[in-house]
Length: 90
Image (cartoon, rainbow, N blue to C red; front, top):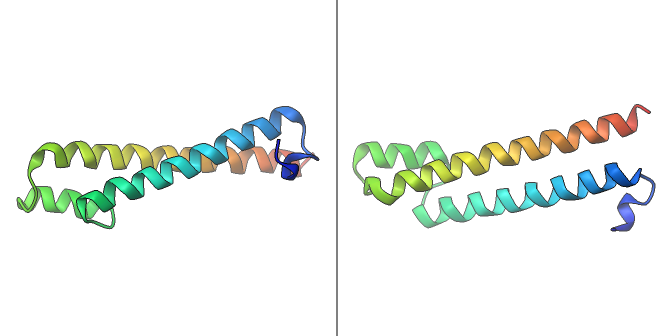
């Protein structure tokens, strides 16, 4: 376990480590999906699909993937914030 977690209860340290990894992986994979489609965010990709600037397939699948990755990233960050809040209020 990383020394940053040394002063935390083992369960909390493991939870934070896993959430941190998930947060990083989802952020980076979302970035790659959007980069592959040449857009900065999901809204721009959807706008390109609606306007016909990109083919609906597989662009819509990329759009859905980016949305899921964005939401999962937010959930992982929220889990980390909650765990840290609990540790800091003990």
